[in-house]
Amino acid sequence: MSSDKVSRFPYPFSSDVYRYSNNSLLLDPPIAIEVTPEYEDEITLKRKLLTDCHSRCYQSLPHTLQAQWEVVSVVLHHLAETYPASFTLDKKENLWTFTNHILNETATFMFGDAGTLPIEPLDFVGRHVQEDLIVMGQRDNDLFLDAGQLCFPANWSLQFNLGMNFVEIHTPIPGFSADRLDEKIRNFIMRLENGQPWVRRNWSLNAGHKLDSSLETFHLWGQKRKEITAENAGQEVYLRVEVQKLFRLPRTHAVLFTIHTHLISLQELSLNRDYAKQLYHVLVELPDFIADYKGMKLFRGQTINYLHNLFNEAGC
Ligand code: HEM
Image (cartoon, rainbow, N blue to C red; front, side, top):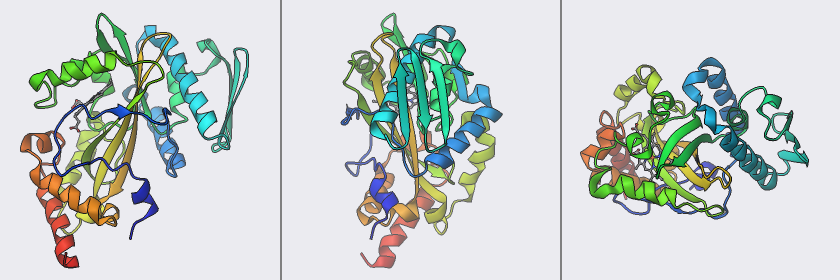
């Protein structure tokens, strides 16, 4: 038995062993955004977070306006071309009219003139997609986090990371600089070509259904991890997968990094027995330093027991 949610879930594993690597693949088709059945709920949550905690969820350096307009162009074209029944884009020279038919909203603005939008271009366009949107500027042979709209972070802070370079951003990850993996991945991104985007899947486990697990609100959601038992893990533990895409922006040579976060409870994931078995093996084998960094120290054992019991009860 399998559910629609499991079959469309971006399952992240290709083997029973997980290690950090450059697991990027060429993105085919080359589309930055995906609209899922969770669209309206997630956009509502995103907009609430942006209203309530704007500086936590949106940051930009002043020189990024041109790159932000490039992101507007990529995202609106992809929405209109991929989901024409839900989004339309009408262009009369620089006068653009974008209609979001799901939300029944229309915006008209002069492309390239930030004064014709009520908020910054990146902030505007991010409110129409489930993805978080990060702009990495490329200069001085390096990549810098120059702007972002980030509502659903996996325990990191946009405000803290703004202006950092790629290697600095990844410093907290244990073992990530071994064999200069961090520099190799940075150099790979710096060679990114226009029209040849890449995609990768990052994963972790969440205690509770929580998309907005920001570092700033850790005290609110982190405690949930202490409540996990082998009995409730099926409902309370979620596999969290981020589908991350990298696009070259041709005019500014910046990089657009999109993050689409998906959550599925282990109970629902286990409708696919192969997935549940493989997750069990990955969790059993995972070195402590990766499990601890991913924040599952307090409930890895309980989650393993839950998955183990599933197969014992089923007699297989
Ligand atoms: C260029 C855009 C990227 C940005 C802005 C970015 C940002 C981040 C951030 C903020 C974290 C969390 C660090 C923390 O704990 O504070 C992270 C984790 C990580 N990043 Fe990136 N990243 C990017 C691209 C990539 C790419 C292309 C790869 C690999 C090919 C990668 C691999 C990783 C890995 C393995 C982790 C640890 C995740 C985990 O274990 O759950 N990143 N990244």
